[in-house]
Image 1 (cartoon, rainbow, N blue to C red):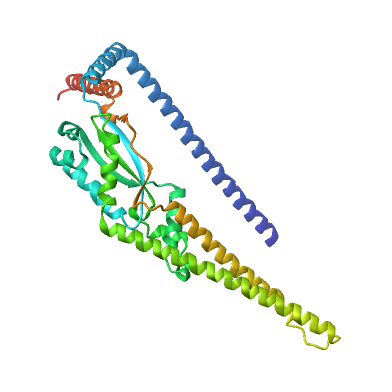
Image 2: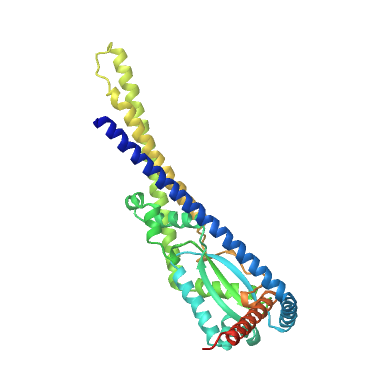
Length: 349
């Protein structure tokens, strides 16, 4: 009797489960159906609105394009160009300060000071509109910055300092390569800015001293690593000579001489090999560092071109902005007119 009751209960539970499942499926289906119908209704309403006001829309778009054409021909055009640099010997902080100083002069409209700094005319200085600097945010630049940072650390600390740790404490000035951007109303002024920007840093005595000290530090590290490599080679020669002597003594004595810890032989060779590999890796990193970091305090990777590129912000794209602006005015007018008609037809009590 109890078995039949259990079977009946299980059938009831399964029936309830299937009923719940079908209800959920039905609700999901109805939701997507209602959503599809709503999208269709909205699309039809938009099409009916366009059909009703198509003449007004076309006229307004034409007016917008005409206004945009007139504005484009009469406005003062603006140009931009970029220079990519690599700052060495701690000069990056000074470079950021200098670029911010130039921007402050632009904000204050101090054309005379800008003219003096860049050795250009006052009219050319007046055409300058923006100075900015930012790191080149690429994975390659990040990895190069990380490798440079590790070279400047103690070897024991560098081995435990991971890329993730570097990324967590990374700031703009920690990158190697940086992009200086300039905007101007004069398309031919950019090439005249490169040398003054670089010379403002290169002539600093403290950076020259840091450069000389860094040269000495790199030379000492290079000599130390090469001396260490020679020491490893000497140890390998001594070790191999001991193995040969031990083997000769064993053969001459008929095997009576105790062997030099055969179980340790491979591990000793492996230790020497690992030590030598680490030294070679450090030497290679040091050579890469020397190639990437020239004697220049500021190394120019990509200088300003002789002719800038015309720059458009969104509100400076007349062929796009003016038609959209005129359409927005039209829609506001139609909305106000429709609201006014609705209020006039609204029943008054």
